[in-house]
Image (cartoon, rainbow, N blue to C red):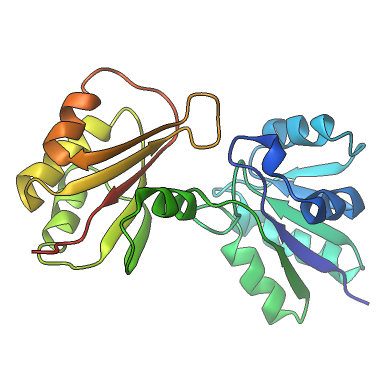
Length: 223
């Protein structure tokens, strides 16, 4: 009998957000696939879930390791998939493996958990339809993409590096005009910060060097 792959949503910063079902799934797993085994080990130790076989499963290694993992599942193993934070397969590794499971008739389960772009959207108060883009390209690719958003009514949500935020905001201002934006930094963590205002105001707000994980929302063209 084949085993099961369980996609487990984990906290994006605050361990208090880890659900009982997520903890149960990790406790019962024979093997845990982790984007970064060191970060997953911190989570396992915090909740005293015991020793587990941890397999590094980064974006670069997903295709190389999926065949081996499928063979483990075929022997009946219960395998959990986690990312560094939030929901696996959402701008994180996992989609290729999940598709391979369906191809081989292996059961897939999902344990709900936090997702940074959903939290940011809820906190923004923008409402309405949106597009989620994960991480955008840089420089020319970013500017080319932003030009496709001229007149776009839906809000656009994406992740950005703190080192590129100021350049990104400048490109948004130059191409889309002084749109309203929402920037969420370090959500659920001690230094959580929300900013909502015009793009020009965001450039002033974040003109100094910042740190942490960022989610950005460009409000749709409502004019």
